[in-house]
Amino acid sequence: MHNRRLAAALAVVASAALAGSLALVRPAAADTSLKQLAEGKGKYFGTALVQSNLSNSTLVGVATSQFDMMTPGNEMKWDTTEPSNGSFNFGPGDALVAFAQAHSMRVRGHNLVWHSQLPGWVSSLPSNQVQAAMETHITTEATHYKGEVYSWDVVNEPFNDDGTLRQDAFYNAMGSGYIADAIRTAHAADPNAKLYLNDYNIEGENAKSNAMYSLVQSLLAQGVPISGIGLESHFILGQVPSTMLANMQRFAALGLDVAVTELDDRIQLPASSANLQQQASDYSTVVSNCLAVTRCVGVSQWGVGDADSWIPGTFSGYGAATMYDQNYQPKPAYTASVNALGGSSGGSSSSSPSTPTSSSSSSGGGGGACKVSDTVDAWNTGLTENITIDNTGSAAVSGWSLVFTLASGQTITNGWNASYSPSSGQVTATNASYDGAIAPGGSVSIGFQATHTGNAAAPASFSLNGQACSS
Ligand code: 9MR
Image 1 (cartoon, rainbow, N blue to C red):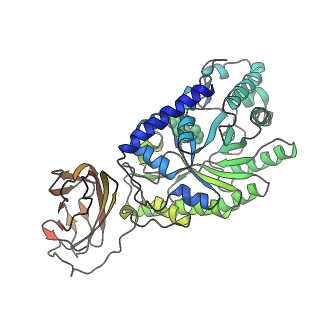
Image 2 (image 1 turned 90 degrees about the horizontal axis):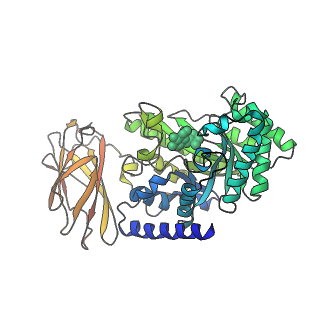
Image 3 (image 1 turned 120 degrees about the vertical axis):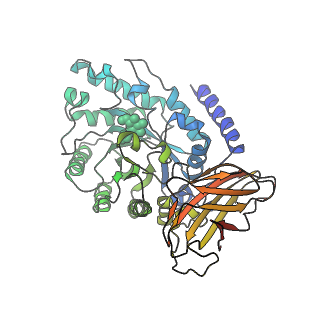
């Protein structure tokens, strides 16, 4: 097994090295990262990955530069690991573990027992065979990953929202005692792993978190080796519970670790800039709450960016739920998280709100007054450039073209929030369908990646709709 794991790890290292040499995106805030800042506070900042994510070099670049904990999104669940009775498949989970190890990320094992993504054979078992099947599953999987996971979500989502226990195959066969049995079984297989109960809608104080609190008190009284509580934290914009901090503190006061395990914050689409600012505030609240609780070990986001988030596929009309946009550029929520962690993320134009000015005295005129700020993040053969266009005039801009000249040797390979033509020399960036309107005092952020041959300088000047912009 270990040779196989080593071979997988080496393959990942090799592919990561290749991806590194082709790196297309650098985080805009190179001087800080979520993981460095979190580590400075004795915590981690994690993400969830599924195996298919590993072939997306842009996603991988963000995942490995920003996060130091990884939760497999699906690959350790029962339907993957034991699809038929006694037949185990750890290949997908092993690949993610190898990736995490190659990038110095710890792993949250997710999960051992859950009503969902449970193969039909388990629910079809006669009730007197469910306990043995559960214990065999836990023992086999926790033994396989012994020493390789930081923690296990041993039982996932055991409660209904009203605080009653979910009547799934395990409860129906064993009653509420299945939870203690599952934790004890996991502990026997991997005594060093932190063992968690994980659920959603238990972030604030409510009937469901009260039920979890009572259950945990009872488990502790029985000497069950539970280590922590996972607060999934799938929030709706503006609805982080005001009791979240107090709720975390009461679990911590029982002597347990707490963790934010699956953070996202969904927005009804299309997301406005006000929505993104509210999301930044929500993220800041969550990160600050974790920092305020000594026993809060870390925060994990569910996915890396909006492009790989589960939200749009599950909640019709909602999305934009993570810290990174569809192109893996940092959003205001990223900056807010960095700031909450005590860092500063200078250089990320897309995440710092512009300061509107009513002045129309900057160059340009006739409604075309504009200010452009840009940042270039370059490496040996490539660069990422983020450009913010402020409408400093008194008239609304309705449709725009931004003209600038690339330094010799630079060629745009891809861009976002505008179309770019041609790819070298004097370039015209034309608004996308969704960002043609810029209100007075408003701004639009666009950007691109380019290759270069040694000169990574930013354009010397910009003009918007034929009017020169100030910088
Ligand atoms: O992200 C997971 C998604 O790919 C699966 O389709 C889904 C199936 O239920 O599970 C998602 O992850 C869930 C996690 O395992 C437990 N908490 C809720 C998460 C989102 O559904």
